[in-house]
Length: 391
Image (cartoon, rainbow, N blue to C red; front, side, top):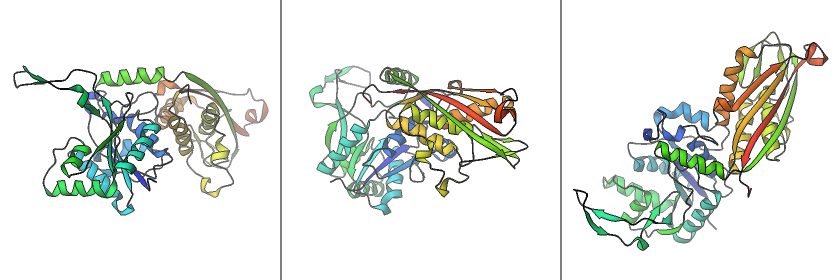
């Protein structure tokens, strides 16, 4: 038995070489940002009890946006080096005394649940283990002038990935010893473990578990990811709420001033509620009432962005992504047009997709029916989702 398993997800680097003017872990890509995907796969793994994010002090607002709906420990701030950041994450969970810790770079967003399972098993068996791949290219040593000085035996070489897995007590002790010895030059935790006298085993890595560094890395990863997601599904959702006393309503995650309010589940956001049902329908995973029953008092007045983030994460946990969201609102008032772009931006932000993948339309019912009489508001939504064929 592995015992209690924790994961430290390192996301404190700047990573600006990837382009876009923002740290690479927050750069938008199909299926959500790299940090969203990395956090989600660990948070959704049945054997991982604790997920500790480590972030940069400048990224607090961005982190709150991308982590909505995930079961995580509060983030801690990293240091000047990756080693400092890992140690900060380990110290943050030390009081919880996990048996095993997995240390993973947020810039590797395509790690699979199977890889995590292998990492846990390897740590339970060997105490320290890293995922590796055979080196396919010939590797040579060169001098300062770039002249070849030797050829290495590639049968003895392995490319190392994350998550790297360790017995918690041993690896935090190694980090503390390195700090005391003023050693901050280790390129990964396995190197630090070797310095501390630990024997590090290996287990099978994954070719898809690439580290995103350059714009070209993002393009290759996105294309490869999309080619594996050929199971395209469409879900449909609808929601209706009655108008009541009040001075505003919530639509698409945006507070809109109005002469009346609405009654209903949580904040009664018909747009987000219909989207949740559409997404859950696409993956055959119940509906909003199954996961967030209106009879449960904890959801009274709750913000519906939590529900949408949950539904999106259910897709990601199955290795899928949201391809497109389409919503139609039916009401006589309020007017949706002036708020359309703000709603699209907010929905895109929650779902981890670009606003170009969110469509919002509005119409009236020509004074007919309960919407025509101004008694309520309706939203219809469709969600296009891509999943792996073997899902």
